[in-house]
Length: 349
Image (cartoon, rainbow, N blue to C red; front, side, top):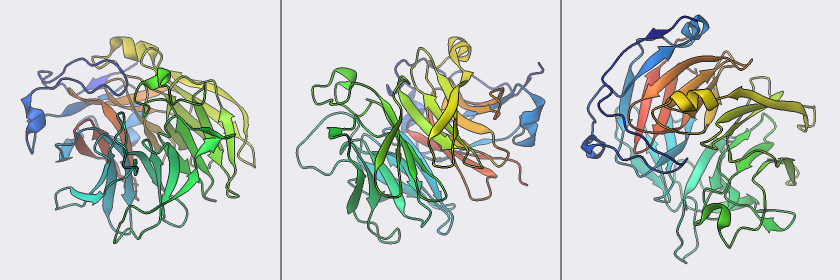
């Protein structure tokens, strides 16, 4: 296997443990524009060169967040939205401008103070361009009722429980072309995690909200289900496990009604995790124009082929990548990484 690696200084790299435990980083994290380089591109298979060059630049576009997550691109507005989960806020960024507050509160709307990951996490758009949110604090999947041009914290709850029991903390979601919604529900938003006294479900699930509003449990056997995505033809559901001990990516074939026919582990990142400087499970992901999976995981953004081959790594120095998003032409990749948001230019069509 041929490796093409652009070597850069590793002075900023540190180790962190626990999926949502922020790493201890140097003072550059507090700067408006951190010291470069921010990472490097490592090519493990020549087929990755269709999507990205080993010399692609990792650019800083925004920073000074607590924990950035859930990016989504608004093509009509040419704006990137992303969550700052602990701060209960959504920010927006536009080329040529700095990041600005878009919405608060974003994920917890009660007046009673609570701990844990309270804000919105995963964000996506439905087929009508309406913003959908995983609200960790409220423990629901919700729809923003206000205009994207004049955002206000007014939400409609789409799904709040399974068989009468509250979700743990909805984390990430994706909508298909018919606006059926798939989402993951790990325990990260609960103040005490798996042992939190307010926990009502004894498993961490992957669900589908049908267009009739009914919530269907698809999977209850994955530890720490996190990132979620659909293949380009929407016939395969991808789920990432952010279990730090066993980072894995799963693939499930769907039938015409969106139910799972078959599936299992697509790629086991355990060996990658053992070699990684940042010990991390698999996290948020998106699918590029060739069907490759771009997913946060050990040391940055992993690029995985549809048949489960690790093609490349966008290594991020000293920070945990949490999620990513493409622009509408999928030649720009945005990465949320701890306190920062980054941009990488990919190949065009």
